[in-house]
Length: 578
Image 1 (cartoon, helix red, strand yellow):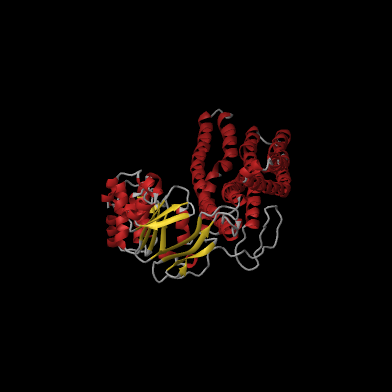
Image 2 (cartoon, rainbow, N blue to C red):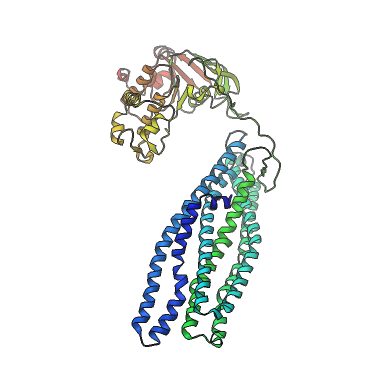
């Protein structure tokens, strides 16, 4: 995966090599420029010539600065696709294997998708930067020293190669210990997440001491793994000493005996101290830290999130053991969807609870909404209104009973046949046209009519029209709701569920949007934020825990004290807003 990411775009690699040559120019010239400045300039009584050589070196540094900037951009162009590939693999693996309620990946998957993917991307970029800088610098220094005084090469290259070998030999141990640290980090994340989810049960059972001990063991294991990583990285100091400073001693001790002039000795030391040693330090940092992290992170991601297909294997326990996976249990949605014949909604004996021991949120509900029905769902907060919306759309399956849309089980309904707009509307970075039409293609005239119907014409003008880019962060919650409502209006869905989807709009804007959907046709279910929605609906479903009552507004006013209490919170003239 790493090698493929580096070589998949030869043009990007060639661009990086070209700018790396420019960045390495001072490494080629530094020894020559300093030696010539001393011998042909200052030592010969010609300071202008000496300054000219130093000016040449300064110009090389300016070229190198431009090369360094462009090299960073070239590395980023290689590293970002690598990050995208890793993230797609992690998210895809988490979705494929999140087959147990509550249908979400575990904390270890979140750690991989956040910490490890970003760590791998940064490490990948650091490794590319370090390796290409080291390679170009070493070649430049060898060429420079060979043309300055070849006799110095035996004093510099053997200890440099020895220090490099010591470092490279230590890399496997570094990789193993870094991987062990990542596994310990995943276990700690998993343990803390499990503890946080069960705090109430832990306290009620008096198990604080036991859980604290378990978490403490996970923390201690992670700390011990970190210490082992730190110990093995001490080898870097030894390799830097052998490769970077031993050549300096050898040049000073034996250079004069080889007939080297003062300028040649100083130039050689400049090659070692200013080019070779920093290049090796960058390589040690890049491979010894970033490279080890990269290898460990990618290996861990590959183990835990394999590509789908025959023969795929994965590490399935979160304990660092590779196992052969079992086939995942089917999720709540079938792979084949069916287009319903109409937007009639039927709930027969529907009961739903959020756990086997939990009290039902909906119990034994029978409800029939014919095609074209306009229903408002009202009631106190937290008593099942949003749950009912999720059941109707098939996002939740009932514990017992069945939900059908147009005669088709809700879980099997073609997604294009129904649309749910939640309270927090989703708007993405893109043009306004893309935001409005991604549920269905629509002609510009149809889009403009929908904008006028729903009441977002002023917002569309302020954004800059359909071709303008939308910045979600710059929009208010109400503006995002208007965009989502218009998107739903343009969709082909004949069943529309608005789950407090107008709560951030003012009453007049809310009334206009609901009226637009009523004129649009199809079945409309409004989970009401304000009771004014009930005043405009043909039917009202009042939810009070597991008890429900269906009727018109006037019927519920006559028979339900709860409904009268809810109605008393609103002014009576809202009936006229439509």
